[in-house]
Image (cartoon, each protein chain N blue to C red):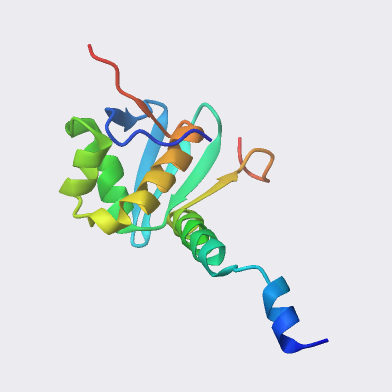
Length: 46
Length: 92
């Protein structure tokens, strides 16, 4: 199979990757800013 | 989780106790028994400014948050709203 045929079959993923990366960065940033836990049921917590 | 409304008035929930820390703050909700780590002093500044500012956006501005960082802070505030650490402030 020729290299040209392979190139034609590969979908352009750069734009989708950039959007996904930006959204992931926002989610990661939010997770870094706030972390939540429930202490219900922990020993010594009433 | 719905998108956080930066242009609404927010406040710390009355059942939430705040403990400032070097990394930011701990928020404990006595009703839900949930503990939130606010891992940024800037976000803590935003949270404490919520009650005195007309909108969350204004609170972010007062805390010195850059416009480019607003989306991340909006998501963080949305997380706090979803866990009822902060709530919308209704007109008295």
